Amino acid sequence: MATVLVVDDDAPSREFMRTLLRYRGHEVEQASDGDSALAMAALRPPDVVITDVLMPGLDGYALARALRGEPATRHIPIVFSTAHYGAQEIEPLAHACGVHDVILKPAQPSTVLATIDSLLVVEQVSVSPLEQMAETQRLTGAGTWELDPATDTILVSPGLRDALGLPSARLPVRQLLRRVHPEDATRIASMAERTWLAGSPAAAELRVVDANGAIHELVVSCRAASGSGLWGVAQDVTRIRTQARTAAQTQVDWLAVRRTIDAFHSAVLTAALPSVAGVGLAAVYLPAPERLDIGSAWYDAQAVGGDRLLLSVGKVAGHDRHPAAVMGQALAVLRAYAHDDPDPVAVLTRLNRFLTGTGRDDTFVTAVVALYDPRAGHLRFANGGHPAPVVVTQDGDSVAAILVKASGPALGVLPDAVFAQRDLDLPPGSAFCAYTDGLTDRHDDPSSADGRRLLRVAAQAFGRTDPDQPPADFLAENIVRDMLAGAAPDDDVCVAVLHT
Image (tube, one colour):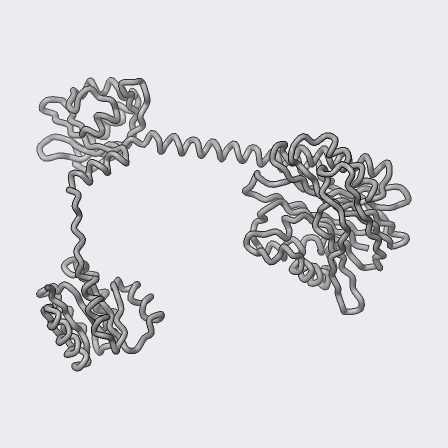
Protein backbone atom coordinates (compact mmCIF):
# COMPACT_ATOMS: atom_id res chain seq x y z
CA MET A 1 0.00 0.00 0.00
CA ALA A 2 1.79 3.18 1.14
CA THR A 3 4.07 4.58 3.81
CA VAL A 4 2.40 7.34 5.84
CA LEU A 5 4.38 9.56 8.21
CA VAL A 6 2.16 10.77 11.08
CA VAL A 7 3.50 13.83 12.92
CA ASP A 8 1.75 14.92 16.13
CA ASP A 9 2.88 15.91 19.61
CA ASP A 10 -0.27 14.25 21.03
CA ALA A 11 0.37 10.52 21.51
CA PRO A 12 -3.34 9.44 21.45
CA SER A 13 -3.79 11.24 18.13
CA ARG A 14 -0.78 9.43 16.67
CA GLU A 15 -2.08 6.09 17.94
CA PHE A 16 -5.51 6.75 16.40
CA MET A 17 -3.94 7.40 13.01
CA ARG A 18 -1.56 4.42 13.30
CA THR A 19 -4.35 1.96 14.14
CA LEU A 20 -6.66 3.25 11.42
CA LEU A 21 -4.05 3.36 8.64
CA ARG A 22 -2.51 0.00 9.51
CA TYR A 23 -6.00 -1.51 9.39
CA ARG A 24 -6.19 -0.20 5.82
CA GLY A 25 -2.87 -1.89 5.03
CA HIS A 26 -0.59 1.15 5.09
CA GLU A 27 2.79 1.23 6.79
CA VAL A 28 2.88 3.95 9.44
CA GLU A 29 5.84 5.88 10.82
CA GLN A 30 5.43 8.32 13.72
CA ALA A 31 7.14 11.50 14.86
CA SER A 32 6.29 13.69 17.84
CA ASP A 33 7.67 16.92 16.40
CA GLY A 34 8.57 18.55 13.11
CA ASP A 35 12.34 18.25 13.50
CA SER A 36 12.16 14.47 13.93
CA ALA A 37 9.73 14.19 11.01
CA LEU A 38 12.04 16.17 8.74
CA ALA A 39 14.99 13.92 9.56
CA MET A 40 12.90 10.77 8.98
CA ALA A 41 11.58 12.05 5.64
CA ALA A 42 15.10 12.89 4.46
CA LEU A 43 16.31 9.40 5.35
CA ARG A 44 13.30 7.57 3.90
CA PRO A 45 10.76 9.71 2.05
CA PRO A 46 7.21 8.59 2.84
CA ASP A 47 4.31 8.50 0.37
CA VAL A 48 2.12 10.84 2.48
CA VAL A 49 2.70 13.09 5.49
CA ILE A 50 -0.10 13.82 8.00
CA THR A 51 1.02 16.54 10.40
CA ASP A 52 -0.48 18.47 13.26
CA VAL A 53 -0.30 22.24 12.84
CA LEU A 54 0.58 23.55 16.31
CA MET A 55 3.57 21.67 17.77
CA PRO A 56 6.58 22.68 19.85
CA GLY A 57 9.74 23.36 17.91
CA LEU A 58 9.24 22.98 14.18
CA ASP A 59 5.45 23.35 13.72
CA GLY A 60 3.33 22.04 10.85
CA TYR A 61 3.72 25.18 8.75
CA ALA A 62 7.50 25.12 8.96
CA LEU A 63 7.60 21.37 8.34
CA ALA A 64 5.51 21.72 5.17
CA ARG A 65 7.71 24.52 3.86
CA ALA A 66 10.86 22.54 4.67
CA LEU A 67 9.58 19.45 2.86
CA ARG A 68 8.65 21.58 -0.14
CA GLY A 69 12.12 23.10 -0.16
CA GLU A 70 14.00 19.81 -0.65
CA PRO A 71 14.08 18.09 -4.07
CA ALA A 72 13.76 14.64 -2.49
CA THR A 73 10.56 15.50 -0.58
CA ARG A 74 8.89 18.34 -2.48
CA HIS A 75 6.58 15.89 -4.32
CA ILE A 76 5.18 14.26 -1.15
CA PRO A 77 1.48 15.00 -0.50
CA ILE A 78 0.97 16.72 2.87
CA VAL A 79 -2.20 16.78 4.98
CA PHE A 80 -2.79 19.15 7.91
CA SER A 81 -4.59 17.65 10.92
CA THR A 82 -5.85 20.24 13.41
CA ALA A 83 -8.33 20.82 16.21
CA HIS A 84 -7.51 24.51 16.66
CA TYR A 85 -8.71 26.00 13.37
CA GLY A 86 -11.91 26.00 11.39
CA ALA A 87 -11.95 25.06 7.71
CA GLN A 88 -12.17 28.68 6.52
CA GLU A 89 -9.16 29.61 8.65
CA ILE A 90 -6.85 26.70 7.89
CA GLU A 91 -7.50 26.11 4.18
CA PRO A 92 -5.92 29.38 2.95
CA LEU A 93 -2.91 28.74 5.18
CA ALA A 94 -2.62 25.18 3.92
CA HIS A 95 -2.77 26.33 0.33
CA ALA A 96 -0.02 28.88 0.98
CA CYS A 97 2.23 26.12 2.35
CA GLY A 98 1.61 23.73 -0.54
CA VAL A 99 -0.50 21.41 1.60
CA HIS A 100 -2.91 19.19 -0.35
CA ASP A 101 -5.73 18.66 2.14
CA VAL A 102 -6.95 19.31 5.70
CA ILE A 103 -8.42 16.92 8.30
CA LEU A 104 -10.30 18.55 11.17
CA LYS A 105 -10.11 16.83 14.56
CA PRO A 106 -11.92 14.85 15.81
CA ALA A 107 -11.95 13.19 12.42
CA GLN A 108 -14.24 10.45 11.20
CA PRO A 109 -12.27 7.34 10.21
CA SER A 110 -13.96 7.32 6.80
CA THR A 111 -12.82 10.92 6.22
CA VAL A 112 -9.22 10.08 7.04
CA LEU A 113 -9.17 7.01 4.78
CA ALA A 114 -10.88 8.82 1.90
CA THR A 115 -8.36 11.67 2.15
CA ILE A 116 -5.39 9.33 2.04
CA ASP A 117 -6.90 7.28 -0.80
CA SER A 118 -7.41 10.41 -2.90
CA LEU A 119 -3.76 11.35 -2.52
CA LEU A 120 -2.49 7.89 -3.49
CA VAL A 121 -4.43 7.53 -6.75
CA VAL A 122 -1.93 7.35 -9.59
CA GLU A 123 -3.26 8.32 -13.01
CA GLN A 124 -1.69 6.27 -15.78
CA VAL A 125 -1.34 8.14 -19.07
CA SER A 126 -2.19 5.83 -21.93
CA VAL A 127 -0.51 7.98 -24.59
CA SER A 128 3.16 7.42 -25.20
CA PRO A 129 5.62 10.32 -24.86
CA LEU A 130 6.36 10.13 -28.60
CA GLU A 131 2.66 10.48 -29.42
CA GLN A 132 2.35 13.39 -27.00
CA MET A 133 5.36 15.09 -28.57
CA ALA A 134 4.01 14.61 -32.10
CA GLU A 135 0.61 16.09 -31.15
CA THR A 136 2.24 19.00 -29.35
CA GLN A 137 4.35 19.79 -32.39
CA ARG A 138 1.31 19.58 -34.66
CA LEU A 139 -0.78 21.99 -32.57
CA THR A 140 2.02 24.48 -32.05
CA GLY A 141 3.40 24.28 -35.59
CA ALA A 142 6.76 23.25 -34.19
CA GLY A 143 9.40 20.69 -35.09
CA THR A 144 13.01 19.78 -34.48
CA TRP A 145 16.05 20.10 -36.69
CA GLU A 146 19.62 18.81 -36.52
CA LEU A 147 22.69 19.96 -38.44
CA ASP A 148 25.36 17.42 -39.37
CA PRO A 149 28.51 19.40 -40.27
CA ALA A 150 30.25 16.29 -41.55
CA THR A 151 27.75 15.94 -44.42
CA ASP A 152 26.58 19.58 -44.47
CA THR A 153 22.98 18.43 -44.26
CA ILE A 154 20.00 19.28 -42.06
CA LEU A 155 17.56 16.68 -40.75
CA VAL A 156 14.11 18.03 -39.83
CA SER A 157 11.19 16.33 -38.10
CA PRO A 158 8.25 15.17 -40.24
CA GLY A 159 5.96 17.91 -38.93
CA LEU A 160 8.42 20.65 -39.82
CA ARG A 161 9.03 19.07 -43.24
CA ASP A 162 5.30 19.08 -43.98
CA ALA A 163 4.74 22.60 -42.63
CA LEU A 164 7.44 24.06 -44.89
CA GLY A 165 6.66 21.86 -47.88
CA LEU A 166 10.21 20.48 -48.01
CA PRO A 167 10.91 17.70 -50.51
CA SER A 168 12.66 15.53 -47.94
CA ALA A 169 13.34 15.34 -44.21
CA ARG A 170 17.09 15.48 -44.96
CA LEU A 171 18.44 18.01 -47.40
CA PRO A 172 21.67 19.96 -48.02
CA VAL A 173 22.10 23.18 -46.10
CA ARG A 174 22.52 25.21 -49.31
CA GLN A 175 19.20 23.88 -50.62
CA LEU A 176 17.37 25.02 -47.48
CA LEU A 177 19.13 28.39 -47.44
CA ARG A 178 17.78 29.11 -50.92
CA ARG A 179 14.33 29.26 -49.31
CA VAL A 180 15.42 31.65 -46.54
CA HIS A 181 15.21 35.43 -46.83
CA PRO A 182 18.75 36.77 -47.46
CA GLU A 183 18.70 39.06 -44.42
CA ASP A 184 17.57 36.19 -42.21
CA ALA A 185 20.14 33.77 -43.64
CA THR A 186 22.90 36.03 -42.38
CA ARG A 187 21.29 36.18 -38.95
CA ILE A 188 20.93 32.39 -38.75
CA ALA A 189 24.55 31.86 -39.78
CA SER A 190 25.72 34.26 -37.05
CA MET A 191 23.57 32.47 -34.47
CA ALA A 192 25.00 29.06 -35.44
CA GLU A 193 28.54 30.40 -35.30
CA ARG A 194 28.03 31.84 -31.81
CA THR A 195 26.62 28.54 -30.57
CA TRP A 196 29.54 26.61 -32.09
CA LEU A 197 32.13 28.91 -30.55
CA ALA A 198 30.57 29.62 -27.15
CA GLY A 199 28.39 26.55 -26.70
CA SER A 200 25.57 28.69 -25.35
CA PRO A 201 21.98 28.30 -26.61
CA ALA A 202 20.61 31.00 -28.89
CA ALA A 203 17.41 31.87 -30.76
CA ALA A 204 16.53 33.89 -33.84
CA GLU A 205 13.70 34.55 -36.27
CA LEU A 206 13.65 33.90 -39.99
CA ARG A 207 11.34 33.85 -42.98
CA VAL A 208 11.15 30.74 -45.18
CA VAL A 209 9.31 30.27 -48.48
CA ASP A 210 7.52 26.94 -48.91
CA ALA A 211 6.99 25.02 -52.15
CA ASN A 212 3.83 27.02 -52.93
CA GLY A 213 5.50 30.40 -52.51
CA ALA A 214 3.91 31.15 -49.13
CA ILE A 215 6.12 32.86 -46.56
CA HIS A 216 6.46 31.26 -43.12
CA GLU A 217 7.76 33.13 -40.10
CA LEU A 218 9.76 30.87 -37.78
CA VAL A 219 11.27 31.19 -34.34
CA VAL A 220 14.34 28.94 -34.29
CA SER A 221 16.39 27.86 -31.29
CA CYS A 222 19.93 26.58 -31.60
CA ARG A 223 21.89 24.34 -29.22
CA ALA A 224 25.16 22.47 -29.39
CA ALA A 225 24.83 18.72 -29.94
CA SER A 226 27.24 16.01 -28.96
CA GLY A 227 30.26 16.19 -31.21
CA SER A 228 30.32 19.24 -33.44
CA GLY A 229 26.70 19.28 -34.58
CA LEU A 230 23.86 21.64 -33.79
CA TRP A 231 20.20 21.02 -33.09
CA GLY A 232 17.15 23.00 -32.09
CA VAL A 233 13.43 23.57 -32.35
CA ALA A 234 11.65 25.66 -34.96
CA GLN A 235 8.11 26.95 -34.49
CA ASP A 236 5.96 28.34 -37.29
CA VAL A 237 4.50 31.56 -35.82
CA THR A 238 3.08 32.90 -39.09
CA ARG A 239 -0.52 32.77 -37.90
CA ILE A 240 0.34 34.28 -34.53
CA ARG A 241 2.28 37.15 -36.08
CA THR A 242 -0.44 37.76 -38.69
CA GLN A 243 -3.08 37.95 -35.97
CA ALA A 244 -0.87 40.31 -33.95
CA ARG A 245 -0.37 42.61 -36.94
CA THR A 246 -4.09 42.53 -37.70
CA ALA A 247 -4.91 43.37 -34.09
CA ALA A 248 -2.40 46.22 -34.11
CA GLN A 249 -3.84 47.63 -37.33
CA THR A 250 -7.36 47.28 -35.95
CA GLN A 251 -6.30 49.25 -32.89
CA VAL A 252 -4.77 51.95 -35.10
CA ASP A 253 -7.96 52.14 -37.17
CA TRP A 254 -10.09 52.22 -34.03
CA LEU A 255 -8.10 55.08 -32.56
CA ALA A 256 -8.36 56.99 -35.83
CA VAL A 257 -12.15 56.65 -35.82
CA ARG A 258 -12.30 57.59 -32.15
CA ARG A 259 -10.21 60.72 -32.76
CA THR A 260 -12.45 61.66 -35.68
CA ILE A 261 -15.59 61.31 -33.58
CA ASP A 262 -14.10 63.30 -30.71
CA ALA A 263 -12.93 66.03 -33.08
CA PHE A 264 -16.41 66.18 -34.61
CA HIS A 265 -18.03 66.59 -31.19
CA SER A 266 -15.55 69.29 -30.23
CA ALA A 267 -16.36 71.18 -33.42
CA VAL A 268 -20.15 70.84 -33.17
CA LEU A 269 -20.77 71.32 -29.46
CA THR A 270 -20.86 74.90 -28.23
CA ALA A 271 -17.50 75.80 -26.73
CA ALA A 272 -18.63 79.09 -25.16
CA LEU A 273 -22.14 79.08 -23.71
CA PRO A 274 -24.15 82.27 -24.22
CA SER A 275 -24.26 84.91 -21.51
CA VAL A 276 -27.78 85.80 -20.36
CA ALA A 277 -28.42 88.10 -17.41
CA GLY A 278 -29.70 86.26 -14.37
CA VAL A 279 -28.64 82.81 -15.60
CA GLY A 280 -25.61 80.63 -14.94
CA LEU A 281 -24.90 77.97 -17.56
CA ALA A 282 -22.50 75.03 -17.53
CA ALA A 283 -22.13 71.84 -19.53
CA VAL A 284 -19.94 68.74 -19.38
CA TYR A 285 -19.41 66.31 -22.25
CA LEU A 286 -17.43 63.16 -21.48
CA PRO A 287 -16.96 60.54 -24.24
CA ALA A 288 -16.74 56.84 -23.48
CA PRO A 289 -13.01 56.23 -24.08
CA GLU A 290 -13.09 52.61 -25.27
CA ARG A 291 -16.25 52.26 -27.33
CA LEU A 292 -17.49 53.06 -30.81
CA ASP A 293 -20.79 51.12 -30.70
CA ILE A 294 -22.68 53.83 -28.82
CA GLY A 295 -24.89 56.78 -29.62
CA SER A 296 -23.91 60.40 -29.94
CA ALA A 297 -24.94 63.05 -27.42
CA TRP A 298 -25.20 66.83 -27.51
CA TYR A 299 -25.85 69.85 -25.36
CA ASP A 300 -26.75 73.27 -26.72
CA ALA A 301 -27.79 76.68 -25.45
CA GLN A 302 -28.75 79.78 -27.40
CA ALA A 303 -30.20 83.16 -26.57
CA VAL A 304 -33.58 83.73 -28.21
CA GLY A 305 -35.97 86.66 -28.49
CA GLY A 306 -37.04 88.51 -25.37
CA ASP A 307 -33.77 87.86 -23.47
CA ARG A 308 -34.74 84.24 -23.02
CA LEU A 309 -32.58 81.15 -23.15
CA LEU A 310 -33.19 77.89 -25.00
CA LEU A 311 -31.38 74.85 -23.59
CA SER A 312 -31.36 71.38 -25.15
CA VAL A 313 -29.74 68.05 -24.37
CA GLY A 314 -30.19 65.07 -26.68
CA LYS A 315 -28.86 61.75 -27.86
CA VAL A 316 -28.93 59.79 -31.12
CA ALA A 317 -29.21 55.99 -31.13
CA GLY A 318 -29.13 53.59 -34.05
CA HIS A 319 -26.98 51.23 -36.08
CA ASP A 320 -27.15 51.94 -39.81
CA ARG A 321 -26.01 55.57 -40.01
CA HIS A 322 -23.30 56.76 -37.65
CA PRO A 323 -24.99 58.55 -34.73
CA ALA A 324 -22.44 61.39 -34.81
CA ALA A 325 -23.51 62.33 -38.34
CA VAL A 326 -27.19 62.24 -37.41
CA MET A 327 -26.46 64.27 -34.28
CA GLY A 328 -24.85 67.09 -36.26
CA GLN A 329 -27.79 67.21 -38.64
CA ALA A 330 -30.44 67.07 -35.87
CA LEU A 331 -28.74 69.78 -33.82
CA ALA A 332 -28.45 72.10 -36.82
CA VAL A 333 -32.16 71.64 -37.61
CA LEU A 334 -33.12 72.15 -33.96
CA ARG A 335 -31.20 75.43 -33.84
CA ALA A 336 -32.91 76.64 -37.00
CA TYR A 337 -36.39 75.77 -35.73
CA ALA A 338 -35.65 77.39 -32.35
CA HIS A 339 -34.60 80.59 -34.08
CA ASP A 340 -37.96 80.65 -35.86
CA ASP A 341 -40.12 79.61 -32.87
CA PRO A 342 -38.41 78.71 -29.57
CA ASP A 343 -41.47 77.09 -27.98
CA PRO A 344 -40.17 73.65 -26.77
CA VAL A 345 -43.23 71.71 -27.99
CA ALA A 346 -43.04 73.37 -31.40
CA VAL A 347 -39.31 72.67 -31.68
CA LEU A 348 -39.71 68.96 -30.84
CA THR A 349 -42.73 68.58 -33.10
CA ARG A 350 -40.97 70.04 -36.13
CA LEU A 351 -37.74 68.17 -35.42
CA ASN A 352 -39.68 64.91 -35.14
CA ARG A 353 -41.33 65.50 -38.50
CA PHE A 354 -37.98 66.23 -40.08
CA LEU A 355 -36.42 63.04 -38.67
CA THR A 356 -39.30 60.79 -39.64
CA GLY A 357 -39.39 62.34 -43.10
CA THR A 358 -35.67 61.93 -43.77
CA GLY A 359 -34.87 58.77 -41.81
CA ARG A 360 -34.48 55.48 -43.67
CA ASP A 361 -33.27 53.20 -40.89
CA ASP A 362 -33.70 52.43 -37.20
CA THR A 363 -32.03 55.64 -35.99
CA PHE A 364 -33.98 57.67 -33.44
CA VAL A 365 -33.34 60.69 -31.23
CA THR A 366 -34.25 61.59 -27.68
CA ALA A 367 -34.11 65.17 -26.44
CA VAL A 368 -35.15 67.64 -23.75
CA VAL A 369 -35.77 71.23 -24.88
CA ALA A 370 -36.25 73.94 -22.24
CA LEU A 371 -37.07 77.65 -22.64
CA TYR A 372 -36.23 79.88 -19.67
CA ASP A 373 -37.31 83.49 -19.04
CA PRO A 374 -35.00 84.90 -16.32
CA ARG A 375 -37.16 88.00 -15.75
CA ALA A 376 -40.20 85.90 -14.84
CA GLY A 377 -38.24 82.98 -13.36
CA HIS A 378 -40.35 80.74 -15.60
CA LEU A 379 -39.16 77.62 -17.41
CA ARG A 380 -41.11 75.60 -19.97
CA PHE A 381 -39.80 72.33 -21.29
CA ALA A 382 -40.85 69.34 -23.39
CA ASN A 383 -39.38 65.87 -23.44
CA GLY A 384 -39.06 63.51 -26.39
CA GLY A 385 -38.26 60.11 -24.90
CA HIS A 386 -35.33 61.45 -22.87
CA PRO A 387 -34.45 60.86 -19.18
CA ALA A 388 -36.43 63.16 -16.89
CA PRO A 389 -34.50 66.33 -15.91
CA VAL A 390 -33.66 67.17 -12.31
CA VAL A 391 -34.69 70.36 -10.53
CA VAL A 392 -32.83 71.28 -7.35
CA THR A 393 -34.12 73.92 -4.95
CA GLN A 394 -33.11 75.13 -1.52
CA ASP A 395 -35.28 76.39 1.32
CA GLY A 396 -33.07 77.57 4.17
CA ASP A 397 -30.80 74.66 5.01
CA SER A 398 -33.03 72.15 3.24
CA VAL A 399 -32.12 71.04 -0.29
CA ALA A 400 -34.63 69.15 -2.43
CA ALA A 401 -33.96 67.41 -5.76
CA ILE A 402 -36.80 66.01 -7.86
CA LEU A 403 -37.25 64.43 -11.28
CA VAL A 404 -39.64 66.48 -13.42
CA LYS A 405 -41.41 64.40 -16.03
CA ALA A 406 -43.17 65.38 -19.24
CA SER A 407 -44.52 62.68 -21.55
CA GLY A 408 -43.45 62.35 -25.16
CA PRO A 409 -42.08 59.63 -27.47
CA ALA A 410 -38.63 59.44 -29.01
CA LEU A 411 -38.12 61.49 -32.16
CA GLY A 412 -37.93 59.96 -35.62
CA VAL A 413 -40.36 57.11 -34.93
CA LEU A 414 -43.95 58.43 -35.16
CA PRO A 415 -44.59 61.26 -37.67
CA ASP A 416 -47.61 62.61 -35.76
CA ALA A 417 -46.21 62.30 -32.24
CA VAL A 418 -47.60 64.69 -29.61
CA PHE A 419 -45.37 66.23 -26.95
CA ALA A 420 -46.67 67.61 -23.67
CA GLN A 421 -45.20 70.73 -22.10
CA ARG A 422 -44.31 71.27 -18.46
CA ASP A 423 -44.19 74.73 -16.85
CA LEU A 424 -42.03 75.43 -13.80
CA ASP A 425 -41.41 78.49 -11.69
CA LEU A 426 -37.77 78.42 -10.62
CA PRO A 427 -36.99 80.51 -7.55
CA PRO A 428 -33.66 82.32 -7.42
CA GLY A 429 -30.79 79.99 -6.55
CA SER A 430 -32.41 76.87 -8.01
CA ALA A 431 -31.04 74.67 -10.79
CA PHE A 432 -32.39 72.78 -13.78
CA CYS A 433 -30.23 69.83 -14.91
CA ALA A 434 -30.67 67.84 -18.13
CA TYR A 435 -28.46 64.86 -18.93
CA THR A 436 -28.07 61.76 -21.10
CA ASP A 437 -28.55 58.20 -19.88
CA GLY A 438 -24.79 57.60 -19.91
CA LEU A 439 -24.81 59.35 -16.53
CA THR A 440 -27.22 56.89 -14.91
CA ASP A 441 -27.12 53.64 -16.92
CA ARG A 442 -23.93 52.01 -15.69
CA HIS A 443 -22.84 48.37 -15.80
CA ASP A 444 -21.08 48.59 -12.44
CA ASP A 445 -24.12 50.16 -10.73
CA PRO A 446 -27.46 49.00 -12.21
CA SER A 447 -29.35 50.62 -9.32
CA SER A 448 -28.48 54.09 -10.68
CA ALA A 449 -30.84 53.70 -13.63
CA ASP A 450 -33.96 54.67 -11.64
CA GLY A 451 -32.54 58.16 -10.94
CA ARG A 452 -32.66 58.00 -7.15
CA ARG A 453 -28.89 58.00 -6.81
CA LEU A 454 -28.71 60.99 -9.15
CA LEU A 455 -31.14 62.89 -6.91
CA ARG A 456 -28.95 62.23 -3.87
CA VAL A 457 -25.79 63.21 -5.73
CA ALA A 458 -27.37 66.40 -7.13
CA ALA A 459 -28.70 67.46 -3.72
CA GLN A 460 -25.32 66.85 -2.05
CA ALA A 461 -23.45 68.74 -4.77
CA PHE A 462 -25.95 71.61 -4.60
CA GLY A 463 -25.40 71.87 -0.86
CA ARG A 464 -21.68 72.44 -1.34
CA THR A 465 -20.14 75.63 -2.71
CA ASP A 466 -16.82 76.80 -4.07
CA PRO A 467 -16.23 80.56 -3.90
CA ASP A 468 -13.77 80.31 -6.81
CA GLN A 469 -16.19 78.57 -9.16
CA PRO A 470 -19.61 79.59 -10.54
CA PRO A 471 -22.45 77.50 -9.03
CA ALA A 472 -23.52 76.02 -12.39
CA ASP A 473 -19.97 74.83 -13.23
CA PHE A 474 -19.48 73.46 -9.73
CA LEU A 475 -22.79 71.58 -9.84
CA ALA A 476 -22.25 70.08 -13.31
CA GLU A 477 -18.70 68.91 -12.62
CA ASN A 478 -19.53 67.45 -9.21
CA ILE A 479 -22.59 65.58 -10.48
CA VAL A 480 -20.52 63.89 -13.18
CA ARG A 481 -17.62 63.16 -10.85
CA ASP A 482 -19.77 61.71 -8.04
CA MET A 483 -21.98 59.64 -10.36
CA LEU A 484 -19.00 58.04 -12.11
CA ALA A 485 -17.04 57.63 -8.85
CA GLY A 486 -13.72 57.50 -10.69
CA ALA A 487 -14.80 54.92 -13.29
CA ALA A 488 -14.71 55.46 -17.05
CA PRO A 489 -18.19 56.00 -18.53
CA ASP A 490 -19.89 53.11 -20.33
CA ASP A 491 -21.54 55.56 -22.72
CA ASP A 492 -21.06 59.19 -23.67
CA VAL A 493 -22.06 61.44 -20.77
CA CYS A 494 -23.59 64.84 -21.36
CA VAL A 495 -24.82 67.13 -18.57
CA ALA A 496 -26.15 70.69 -18.86
CA VAL A 497 -27.03 72.86 -15.85
CA LEU A 498 -29.07 76.07 -15.78
CA HIS A 499 -28.67 77.92 -12.48
CA THR A 500 -31.02 80.82 -11.69
